[in-house]
Image 1 (cartoon, rainbow, N blue to C red):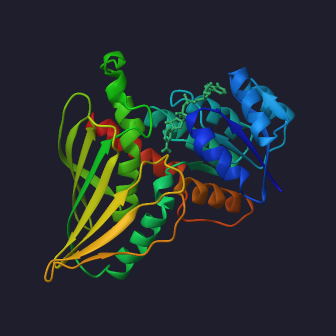
Image 2 (cartoon, rainbow, N blue to C red):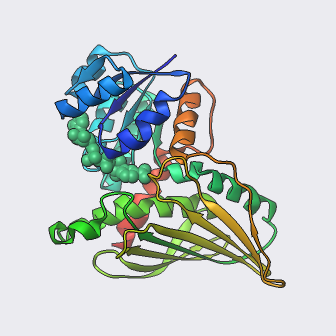
Length: 317
Ligand SMILES: NC(=O)c1ccc[n+]([C@@H]2O[C@H](COP(=O)([O-])OP(=O)(O)OC[C@H]3O[C@@H](n4cnc5c(N)ncnc54)[C@H](O)[C@@H]3O)[C@@H](O)[C@H]2O)c1
């Protein structure tokens, strides 16, 4: 059995990580940690977890883990990661790993020194729609991609910044952008290779357009905070004679995946691609467990790769 510990028992842990790891037959969640005693008791009862900790230091000292999952507040992820990596425990951390690339780089150095796996939770890569899209793009690799248009109008999957607009301080716009849109930048890099910023036109709160260039194509990325509660995330991949449209679900909507349509420009035929049902968070959890069982997985985002997203967003702001 793979022994997993989970730190931070908020929204994401409760909706995604706890059920995903608990459903894996090779896993035992042996201990959980949060600063909130109420959450600890509720979760331990629901998942029959016996060891509860209010402090990560104590949990690491007393328990033996094969891996730890961090899902604390975005400001705390790096502090906890530092302790987990120093203790030489393989780690799956929620994004962002740190609020500055300098700190993310230091964490990477520790993981290298300690020779410990350090994975970042860019789970969109594990969406069954994205897995299918990768295969389609691989088949079409000789066809020129004329352009890519990707929009993400954030809806209510998470604490929509628009709902607490008055509380958002100016200096937090970078952090909000990093928190939400690092997912999209990570995915663009995953699909189209290294990207460079050509130009950008963003409002102070991070809404607007960025033009990227990769070796494969030109990319327009449009970030907006949706005025409605609807999540609206779609990518259009334009070829000479056809277009692939991939539409993403709200990330925390359980057991859903992206859909793909291919539109033929010549005869206007619109074909819906068959995609196996599944959920990105569960696929990612299973891949992390397999990694702990010594089976490598190229889809998992390592922390070195994830630093690039922070660096790009630092350049944008
Ligand atoms: N992958 C995704 O799609 C996705 C979606 C939403 C959020 N997230 C990320 O997940 C992480 C958690 O987000 P959330 O919405 O669940 O937050 P949350 O505020 O609901 O929960 C965070 C929890 O961490 C606990 N915590 C804080 N400091 C701690 C510490 N030092 N030790 C132990 N526990 C501590 C808090 O008490 C709280 O229960 C963030 O990094 C966020 O960016 C990812």
